[in-house]
Image (tube, rainbow, N blue to C red; front, side, top):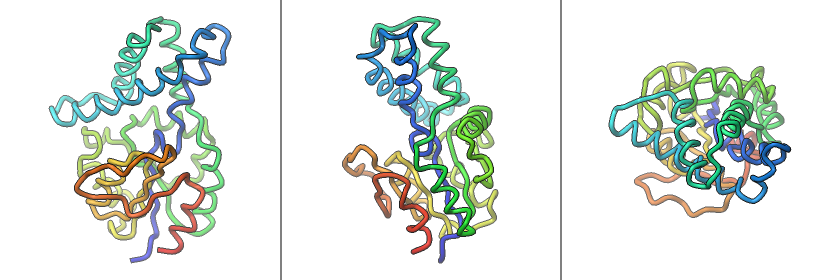
Amino acid sequence: MAIDTCIFDAYGTLFDVTAAAREAAAEKPFESLAETWPAIARDWRDKQLQYSWLRAITGEHADFWQVTGEALDWALEANGAADPALRDRLMQLYRELSAYPEVPAMLGALRDAGTAAGILSNGSPEMLQSAVSSAGIGRLLDHILSVESVGIFKPASQVYDLVGRAFGCEAGNVLFVSSNGWDAAAAAGYGFTSVWVNRAGAPVDRLPHRPHHVLEDLTGIPDLAKSL
């Protein structure tokens, strides 16, 4: 079946999750982060994902904003940087994460080709709307779908069900794009054609399913969607 719908994960895929720590470190009040911000960004992201999985497994759901704050608290303490002012600034910056530079043109090319596009994310609706507005890409997206409507994080199948409901499409018509290897793998198992955006050149995760395509960034998504 031809691809008529392209669905993107948000954090790490469209939006650079390292941007908040990097940008804070460039601000005068937080210059002490010059050497530690990469570790803080890494630990923050790792714990954010780990906490989402654990909450999904245990059935103790909380929205992604709470999970993000709890992960940041751990990361700051682990790196000797626990400071309320820094925490507040990092959380503010996370609401306005920078999009990767190729994102607007890539989404514009999909729109020009008549391909529907949307976000499917662990993020809460408020978080996602803020990031999309900050990046100026709202007009290029048909739907912004949050796990909050089903109360469980990815990779639960209930989350992927949201795409068909919103777009009225079959799984085989969907190109699903994520920078998370586990997300791209789960989407492949669900029945989407999946793309792993492997910016770091990491090995493929050893999971029951594997992504169908691996790209270094998002630039090639419109051509790939057209070719399938």
